[in-house]
Image (tube, rainbow, N blue to C red):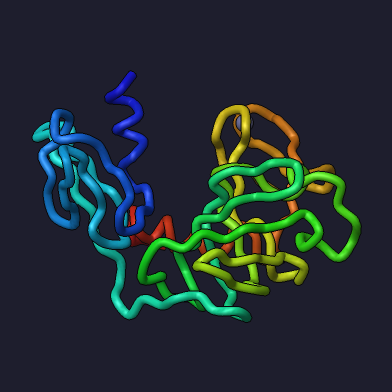
Length: 204
Ligand SMILES: [Zn+2]
């Protein structure tokens, strides 16, 4: 059970200060620091868990990181979604990685041009979204996804976790057949996924 969740942690994008585990579980390696027995990420990057040697490290992403400002286009992962709002952990600003931990909030009135009843029809926790920063206060960024090129760029099936594919009737899960709703960006499934594939295999 716990080794399965550690397995899933590998490849996760983390920001500085993000909890990776405790020293009883892992030996802290590159890109990490320890405070009171808890291992945290020191950098923005992807987690690598070496299950054989019980080591955890973070592979740092490219430098030249940026801070979001009002007007920036950002990319982040939905951390939670309620009926009115969704929290977004921002990791990219204007195609550059962010230099710190930034939290964005998306309100249901800012997601689409048309009236939207519930955030559950727009995005769900775990989705990757592209949004525009419409205001900022105390490092909290208010986001909007009203434009065509904004919205979910990468969505997972709530049932099985597989990548959803856009179909006429909605977002379709190729694995379990579930249909879900999202407000997707015009280039859904293109940019980020290709980049992600490139991380794993260098062909194509
Ligand atoms: Zn599914």
